[in-house]
Image 1 (tube, helix red, strand yellow):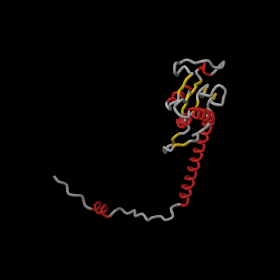
Image 2 (cartoon, helix red, strand yellow):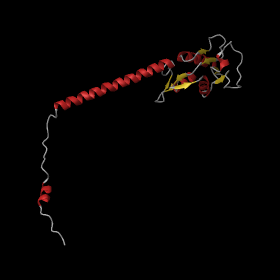
Image 3 (cartoon, helix red, strand yellow):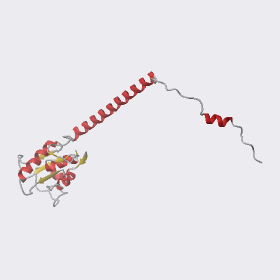
Image 4 (cartoon, helix red, strand yellow):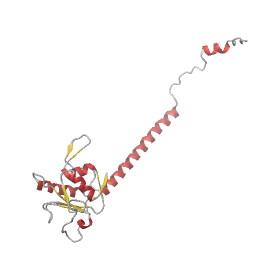
Length: 192
């Protein structure tokens, strides 16, 4: 997961060929007329357009639907919402936690998994709060599993120690013959 401000997210969306405007960090840097107290006036919103050749209206509607489905935006408006037939309005008061796959899916409607297979469904968690909760849950479950595995290992080990070895090999404690022979030989005469 990565933290994205609205500007960070806009820069990522540009990489997929989308145009970003109505934010001081993009285009001319000017913000046009919007509703009173609009997030645009505070640098917390962007307008996203996809006027590339082809079915731009369908792609724009899809982008709006995906943004709403992610559930991380303060506002997500697009075709079907008043005044947003030609673009998608995205606002983030703070930041959002998203994976690179979620950003790719937001921009294109698909993402590639680790095996390189293109997937059309939304990847990962739906909101930053649920992703943190689910991540903590996963970490807790992993810790619990390791505790159980450790306890099982210790139980097995202690039961084997308590039983003792099933067959005790005979150990020859006598030193090898050549060591005894060397020990019994008289010392060599001193040379003078």
